[in-house]
Image (cartoon, rainbow, N blue to C red; front, top):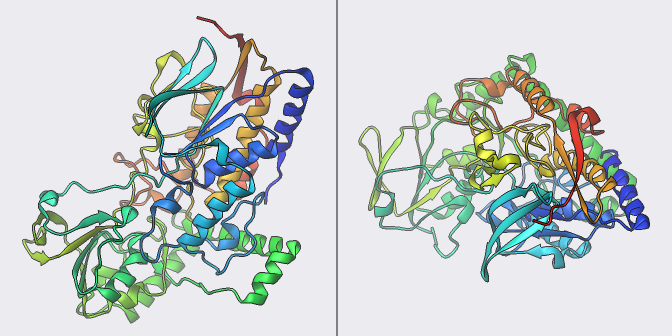
Length: 519
């Protein structure tokens, strides 16, 4: 769905280097989720095999490997949830479920022969830029012990949804029954006939609560605030439709474009105080009040009091029906402590529970702060982000040459497919790799780094745009860090991001070469 400029430019430089007998950059890819696999695929398509994918899990797939809870599925239509350069052509339904997306990721490994490049069950304990040799050194920890991986370039494809967030609640360790986070679902526990407490009511909870409630004796949902939940227009594709989309490329491309543009127009909802947003908010509120609000479910428990879009808009066909069940209770009083057989809220009420499931999301705003990453002069990335994570077009940080982020700060979306954004970032990264390849030799290193001025200018522009969005409202969301800075979302049309990442701006980057020291 995008001009493949980056790959073509990089492929040309790779061919030229081979003719001239020069090396191509070695690349370390941190993360075996979809964005990490996409990076590997683009390297393979450019005829580069000198790369390693480091993945902490025992298999690829990232968030789609971790999240196996009942009902796990994507909220982006499936035919827009595969890469334009590595499409899955035979999706079984409009909104793919977790097993099918994981299967797509695993198929990419086989299709592009990525297996030999994978280092599974291996974590990155730290990364540092070796200025003498112009390389990145990654400290790895795995089953066989620790070792070091050296590469000319590092691409962090860790994503934003990889570290489950557990609230610090007094007494949790004293709970007598099993408990877990939704991203670490304990399939050995049967919830049938049990009293299940669910802490959180966000994107994961609206998917797993309905099947849990179907089996449990009582389900109690503890929520911080209600969400806007719209209908999910999901259905299995007919066999004839699947065959047509699989065999006729032009039809499949047209369908992808139709999905893209129908979702792209939803950006109108997310502009601060927009007419479209106010209209949609009023429709939501009226529908919920007419069909859901009751003595058991008062307005405050189901109708949000913040502008639509301030928090993620959710989609489900059975969320409100589940809340209306007599064996389901919604509690909007804060949880203060947990006892061996109960969850206790701030009003002193004890809510009996035999199982606790946390649907409390992820540590999304820290990005790479949990990994010690040191750049030029030993500068620590976490120290550069004391006010909040930010990166040039979500992809590069000043002072960290030959280092790139995918699904980085301010690239998340509320209205379209994140895979589109990843493709655009890769277009930029591949052009940077081309610039690195252009002057790389066996005895000299080439550094490509975003200039400090461009880095700071891009951040100012991004934050100015963010202030004009619904996300800047007074709600608490996973888009914001503790100080209220919006670190996660792209604050405009994705078409604008497409344009901004179309061609690398030479004035924004510094390319330098130096002899590799043998010290």
